[in-house]
Structure formats: C-alpha cells, structure tokens
Image (cartoon, rainbow, N blue to C red; front, side, top):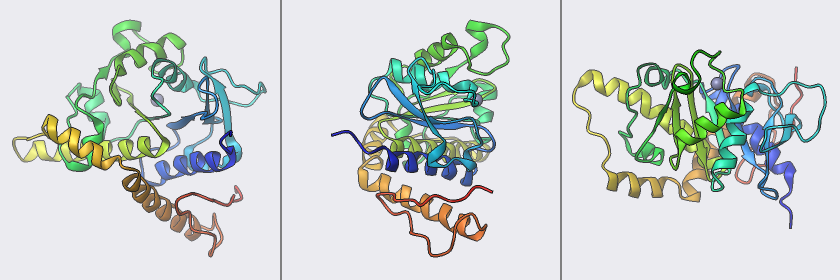
Length: 263
Ligand SMILES: [Zn+2]
C-alpha cells in the first residue's frame, strides 16, 4: 500500500515552519524527507523561506536532485546536499541543512562539538567537520555541485551530523521527527557547550551514556512528545499572528493540519 502523501507533505511543511519558529532557520535552510514509496526520490520545498512553506510547496526530486516535474520555478541551490546523502546512506530518511547561529562558532573555529547533556545524546559519538576549501579551494561556499554534495556525504560517513566550515551544519535521521529532534537538541547542546567552556572544565557524555541516552531519546513516544510541543507552539504563534484562525484543529500526532492562506 503506498503511503498517502498529503499528511507527509503537511508534516514536512510544518517541520519547515517549526524550524523557523524555533529560530533555527531564517530565510535560509531546508529540510527534506525521502519518498517512503520510492527510495530513489525525495521531497523538499521549492525555494522559499522555511516560515512560508505549505504542503502545496513540496516538490519531488530524483537522487540527482533534478525536479521530477520540470518547470521554471526556483529550487534550492543546495538541494544536492539532500540528494547525495540519500544516495550514500540508504538508512537516512530525512535531512536538515541549517546555518543556526549557535553552531556557527564551531563551524568557524573547527572546535569539536561533543554532546554534553542528556537530550543531545542523539548527536552520536562523533560530529565530523567538513571544509569545502580542502577539496575545492575558493568557492562561493554553497554546496551546489553534485561533487560538493558527495564530498559532504563522505565527510558525514556513518555519523548523524556534519559541521560545515564557515557555513553551518547538516543533520540526518531515520525519520523526519528524528531529524527534527537531533537538529533542535544539537543546537541547544552547542549553546550549552559554549557557555560551559566559559565556566570551567567540560565533562562530555561518555560513550555508554551516548548509547543509552540516545536510544531513550529516539523512542517514538519521545519524538512525538517533542513534535507535539513544537507543533503547539507554532500553532499558537500562527493564530496570534493571524496566519491561522482561532479554533483551528490542534496539530496533535498524527498531524492533520489545515492549510492556511499565504498573505
Ligand atoms: Zn547552506
């Protein structure tokens, strides 16, 4: 039975708006999901700011990052990040690329990002750094060519997150909710680590703590709880700002969001 796509598109659109609402993305950044019925395709919004993404903006791409429906609309320049990671990692079902300010000091200095509190264990034991300059010299810093996306995917390797020098980070997951959880708490972790370093010696999670706490954090109930919380905050904000009418259905799990009119 094919997976119905409308709820998936609603959830992907909502994920974009949550990432904007939580301050992780501004006008830039994107999140995608692999097509659950066709591993050789993925879904990503057309090129608009994450806060504006609705289900109708979701487009399908091949793993070469070519739009399945050819037309003259704009697509994200950096979509090869998604296509090349899906190609390299059959276990990955969702990818998020962002330039969150809490991560940038690590991307600028090359400082190691280690998990230092329980909610960040899902980052895993290693967060590699990728420097585009090493392989490609001076570029415009965008990951826009397939070979650049492949290089990034190689740097990610078997890990779940890669920091991109002078640019941002890319996070992978086995589901959209997992990638949202890992993205959100890795950013929280980066802020906490920066603050903790100013106070004194940092004691990171042990390998055993990362394994055990990571497994606990990624249980479906935990992921749903976090998703519902972010979703509710978004909904309140959208009602308050007039983007959504009061009394609209709350977006509990499973998400049954109603469309909203774009101004
Ligand atoms: Zn970028």
